[in-house]
Length: 260
Image (tube, rainbow, N blue to C red; front, side):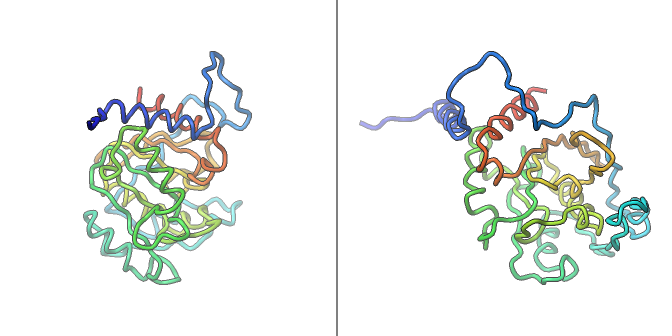
């Protein structure tokens, strides 16, 4: 005799598995004190509105004129030139083939995956070390799959992308953003047009247009030409794997974020 498992039962089981992975097996009435939590702030300052029709070197250079910070003197690159991608397919083709994207060449680049206008876009800093044909194919990808299941989002309906085209250990995201990769990432997000964006990883903020030297809080939305995209920023998947308490904190943020 076969037993049919209802969708609700599967979702409840996924949520319970999430909490087990987070190391939470008890219910407490009082909130724990997180000494490493980000400082509270009333409102995050809005990043400069991104204009996809203006990616000139002069405009970008004007955004980095603080002489006290050597990183602000990084040479700005106009990655798109006069061939700014106009849709996701064009962007993905450019992402894999454009020589200007990095000095290493095209070998080892990993394409993003997923549909346009998804319920959720997941953005990580870089692919996993052993990714080849499939982005997030290792331990981090396994955790991400479990997270999406617990969120009630089909992985096939989520757009999963990296801000850098290849695995880049200890990436200097400040310098990469200053060199122009922030414009590439913002254009990517604009073309995907997600309903919500989850950005994961230490150092990912500069790559989505946030100047961390001028604020003590996390970005809450990206203001683009056509829409405002709500953003949830959290630690990277490798950190969530190494420290189960961060999984519980992420889950709490997710519940609060989606309840807004």
